[in-house]
Image (cartoon, rainbow, N blue to C red; front, side, top):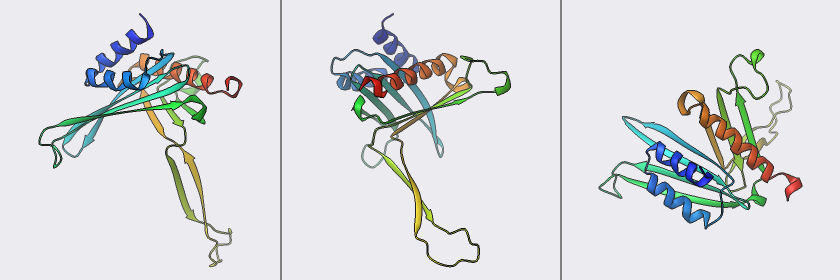
Length: 191
């Protein structure tokens, strides 16, 4: 099965508006071939309602494509339930961080290439920055002087969490494969 056929199969398998997801993805792909991809469907509990969203990331030779589809209950803007689909195409030169967090059970028994319980993938390309500020101090507990503020700025445009329990071991492995392909595509030796 080709990468595109496998992607379409995985999107259809989520059962979450597959035609809408594919339309958003195809628009952003603009005819480029897919090198690697990741599909994640995540349920969201909002008070007494269950909603879902799906995120599809596709890597091409030149870009990272991110599609996100959400469903919404009827509200003041629409008398009927509706869905929104957005897609973003990011040039690979803009991706400045790919963070992969592996979570394993019984780490003392883990072997190289072994199964992961969860994987978190965070990708930054500068569209969203988070600034965390706190009052600065000098370390003297008796000091009452104003030392201004200190903080950290982080680039985390997208974070997905994939777990074996919720998504399946195959999706965890696909996420790891996607992260490796994206890391290779954005490495300095290829730029």
